[in-house]
Image (spheres, helix red, strand yellow):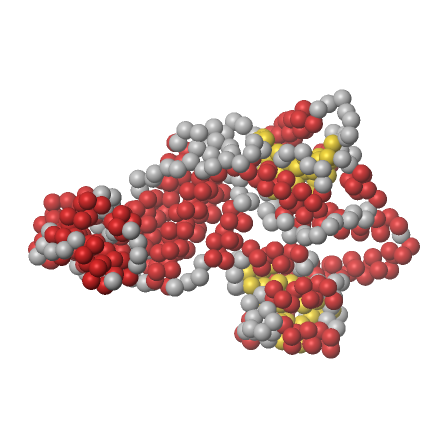
Length: 519
């Protein structure tokens, strides 16, 4: 009988987890519950459980603090991490602490039972190894080998800090190698489906290369190619030969494979830099041409500035909580990406990043949320995406999530269409607004909008827009030291002279005279 404890500040989650594990009571038993990290440590020291289920978000000592402590003081104890957030930093901490699994709340009975089953398997395996390892150098070497492989994977992904020392005899040649190149492999399915390690052995590359599956994405793997100090074949030709052969073998199994290739490096500590180079190389694939399948790192590049004519409409649909329209516009956006000549995946990522920042700013306007951690997590996840369709699915879900959150705010849930127009103008006065665009947002005829606006407000559309802009400029003139051309631009006037003329017409004085009154 194996024992476990649960550390979670939510009593209902603890009770629910125990209930979901009830069908396994013939093999496991809960011997305690704790609501935060310190009391959890005390309970572990008292009960000596075989494994622990813990939450990341808790008052007092949270999971980010608890995991390293447990990993250091109870290294053989399996850990199952649960959280209500898909946060990259949480996942990173769970991986570096060698957790069995990372579950997102709410999780199913089947999911938690599968995690516990894996914990039991590890315990059983540990017991077996403990009985035999002293008498088995082969098993000891296997343990060292897997440990070294995990360390190298963490080094590539940037999870490992400090010096790295390899212990296994099988990988001693790595430390004796003068230089290496990293290949990041991105398959159209799980990397394990291709059996890269077996392919290397069959092709005679076993002593030249080491394959490591990614712990972040199942479709990504890493191939470290160790270069001999002397050889008849140049390093570039060798990499080209291996890449071509890999791609052809994948095609024979109806798999698509993309390869990013780093520069030559001479130190294991440079593996993360090499990974960043392979990512940058893969990001340079041209969206309109999918014929190329391996990419060399060519140095730093800069994203291309482009203008999407539907961007303002897209942001309005997000703000208004219009999910169907947001979905359609996202499809239009990625179709537009493919239509642009020489447009790369890196360009698409950058555009989506800036667009997502604008969506987060809209969300923050109404919900006052701190999105910095979310932004960092997104960049880490997007950095592991190397196909446009995957990028679209990721950002589509992100945009729809924000749209759903804003829908509950009912920002444009007004009966009068002119009131909706006024709300939009007050929120977007700094943009290049005109009646044609506003009419299209609210599905109106331009002439009808003009007539209806004058009937409802007693003034022309352009006069109302100028009134809003001038009021905003007054706030900036009295409350900041910004220059006149900056204020003009900030309220929607590209031409400062035109701003001066409108301001004086509305107030009877110039902007400088208005500011002098407050000075």
